[in-house]
Image 1 (tube, rainbow, N blue to C red):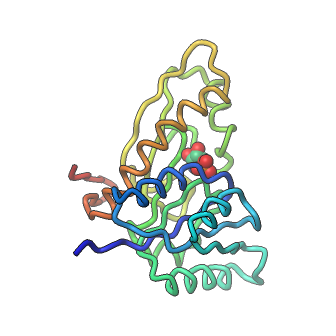
Image 2: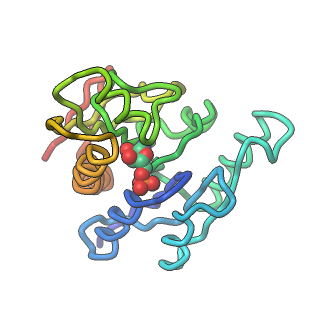
Amino acid sequence: MVVLKNIAVFASGRGSNFAAILNKIQSGEITARVVCVISDNEHPPVFDVAIAAGIPTFCINRKQFATPEEYADALLSRLKEKRVELIVLAGFLKLIPTPIVRHYPQAIVNIHPALLPNFGGKGFFGIKVHEAVIASGVKMTGVTIHFVDEKYDNGAIICQEKVAILAGDTPEILAKRVLEVEHRLYPQVVKALCEDKIIVKNRKVIWNR
Ligand code: GRF
């Protein structure tokens, strides 16, 4: 019998990576079910993708609570209630509270549209990443998928794929090419995580393909 992993997706906006992952779940390639989509925003476009698939959505953000502890408690109790085993960040712009990071060791992943550790950290999100990449004059950018810890874009790197910067690239054109790679790579990593094929030892990640 195939055991399905319970995934929570955290997303702030568009949700194209979530849609790419959902697609592979619906086709049976990824042995998982998305049990909820959580956002810091009230009505992000990603909720429409979830609602169309019958997946519960929740807006949980720091401003709804008096203290950071209450915020973390609310998130954690929702995750426990939904029996979440893996958290997939897909364009989630807030830091994950420490109690959540501790409760889910090596079970929270993020995707970043550049080659970390460059062009990452606080403030590097959305088109800003690609603007900074182009302004720097580097010839290569790419996609990084990594585990999540208490700092922005800092956890152990699972995989990276390069994308060349071409003459005439604008941040928007480059973003589009990088996003195509994201949509291919992220479902592969989520699939491997659901099959327990990725292990971490001291920041070294081994992916048994
Ligand atoms: C992606 O570029 C991802 O790398 C970054 O945020 C963006 C989210 O896009 N973390 P979408 O919401 O999945 O379309």
